[in-house]
Length: 197
Image (cartoon, rainbow, N blue to C red; front, side, top):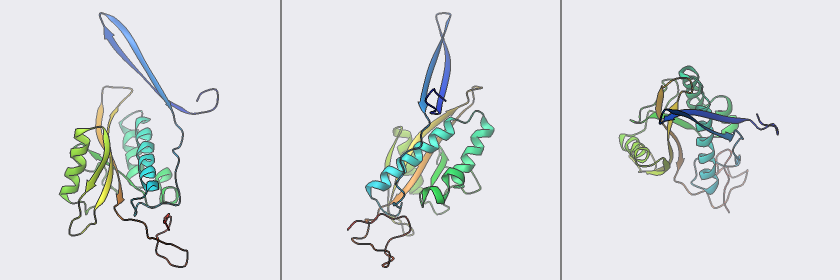
């Protein structure tokens, strides 16, 4: 925490060159991302894009703060089981998923949707392999509508040892336009939805 009361996450790394040791220091503020509560992942709207990016940023910061493998596993479980800061009460219908770089879920107790088709998994892994992050279009299948995936490639390094873990952080937004009009009595929008019109 700095003098103004803002919590920070800092990392120090040591490197050697020509027989001399050097230290690299970096830090960032641990401030909560701006969240739009009247928004749903059921619609591809600007608020959905903002919330998806905020959610993955929040997950990355929490994973980065993990000091050892045990706390990393605990943080992954919290994220994929949608508890604590990741609960539906806090995030509405947005969810984050944590995968390894092969596209497999890292937790058996909540993990990824069992209905993810192989073509979706391949699209997420391909995006994670080609760049640090971005949006992937997941094509419509016989069971699932076309969906957008926001993907970030993340490498966790233990601050206490040389252990690393390579992860993909993913959240999904359905490719639906919001209804033209929405009122409380019409029930045409899901809970937390921001509708145009």
